[in-house]
Image (tube, rainbow, N blue to C red):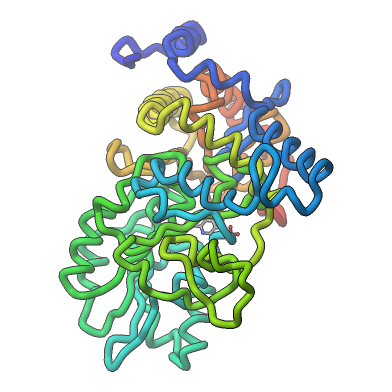
Length: 428
Ligand SMILES: *Cc1c(COP(=O)(O)O)cnc(C)c1O
């Protein structure tokens, strides 16, 4: 697969599809006719294997009732650990450093309650001004719980251009009064990958802990959290991992912290052997399992069994390779076909700095998105001017990408977006 003989033709797209070693996975997903789904970065599509896993869980409930916890196809009692083991290779961790539990925001609260320990003059948290709002709300509320004013104790590193963060700026903010750094692995708007390895080294040099929000990287790019010595990370499983709407999230805790008791304790964080002793003295597990709280949401957990199997079959390196390639092809097409139409590509161009989506900027982005949807292309819009489009390695074809660009070109040439208001929907 190379783009040396790049051409604008549909035949070229078809040729790339014929050379795509992941093409066989497309038929495992529910794709709708006459629709090109480019929003797998917000909600991944349902696969047949994920559907099967959910139906199996329902069958087990039907057949075993309470005994489903210990019997059936996949006993529920260890399912969160089992899924953690399946995700571990995707984040570069050992099986016992990952647990599938909670949701992104809940897991961040748990990790802050566990690892944010302001002491003396070391009280501040460094985040960034482009961070996802829910993370910022969680950080502010945790500061409030500690009686610390977020206006003073939360440092949000500025972006120089509104798109990207500069690692040097983040490192410059790591002063003596900083206890913790919380950053995204991949920025949700611009798709920039931060240099996690370097940031971790620099934080640790200054005795600062560092944690990452991996929502936009899990299943899109490989990670080496253990090797980089990251302290902790958390993410959702409904975006590139295709775990389904509201899928249970995940977290990573570096094994060197296993002796740190969870800030928010609950019985599912127990040492499994002890949990049903039902003692009032909590004995946490000596693994990432300890950071669970209550009973896992089984029906939001089950589809992951199927979808993670697909990741194991396909291989994260291959998924990343195709993602880089198909996005590169996509950007080339956009530049050729939409020249002069006032679009800007707002994601980094270098492979090592870009995640899984293309961030297309335009003054009329909100209503261009509406026109795209009306014409069968599913994007998402991020205010004020970003159209996010994600060709997903497991189910997007090069032909999809080619067609999506043709549709966008038609929308612009015929001004089909003008019949919509340029404002966002309630759920964008
Ligand atoms: C999707 C996303 C979230 C969502 O948080 P939930 O608790 O799962 O609703 C949080 N942070 C980032 C960066 C995200 O991309």
